[in-house]
Image 1 (cartoon, rainbow, N blue to C red):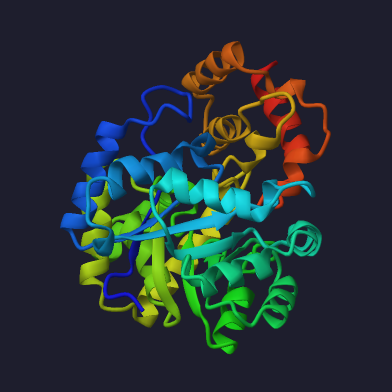
Image 2 (cartoon, rainbow, N blue to C red):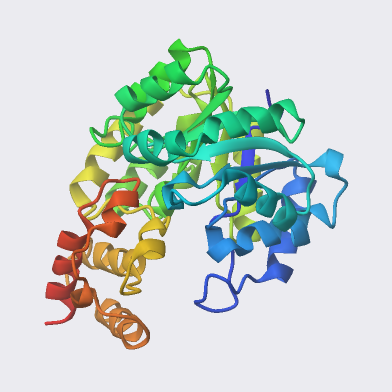
Length: 371
């Protein structure tokens, strides 16, 4: 399907400050230019990314600066954030306007988990709407983004034969994860003869800054970076047609595109190295957060959940207290609600792709940093 298998994800763009709406458009322009210069053309966004400003960034930084025929734009119907009164056509038309396009090359029903697929998607006839939009030429390729078990995925695929591709969270840490079920979902998509698009190949950046003993394991073998190992793992899967990466620095673009261009497969020894790395990482990561921030969008108290989890993980991976982590926590706690302000309403947990028991984890964060 793709000559160049790397896609540019617009979910975690560089910012001017801590406000996710304040995208650094000048910097994004440079990233886009570098990506296209190095062979890229696929750009992925979402309705709620950066409080809706990610789609604006697609328009300003891609569509208004390059011929439409030279780029491929992917967007998603956000069933995880919709209510029964919402109308899919209004959201879809808003997305077209925000992105500055009159059609999407790829369009996905976003987060077809059990609760959102059997609830909102069916009640609002989202798949019927998307199929109709495809027939009208508003969508070239229709797919789904899935964050649930293989059983739920099978139901979705069986009931919607119009699906052409499935976007899955796959990385070497999540491959055998009983919650994510990356392996089971991947093999199911293969069985149906559909293409696989990969999201979170670096697990929200967690597979960039790996534990020191994992880094040594990698470099002692072939001196390649943790990023190279992680991207190579998913590129090695034969049904994978596209790998999405969030790239916030020029160095990220250059490194990722170079890895894709030069990938020649992994041998059994390299796969064994990755298995060892996975075992080490699983023993050291306290909270398996990928920092997608779906939780924050639904938090009634405005708690910066992923930021607190990131600081907590860093502290838990250290042999001694890192005072900077306590400083970072205090700085955020002065601007936002503390972890202890969580009211355990459960709204965040319903949309968490990693199925993290967020309120319980926030209690641990509060216990550590608010002592």
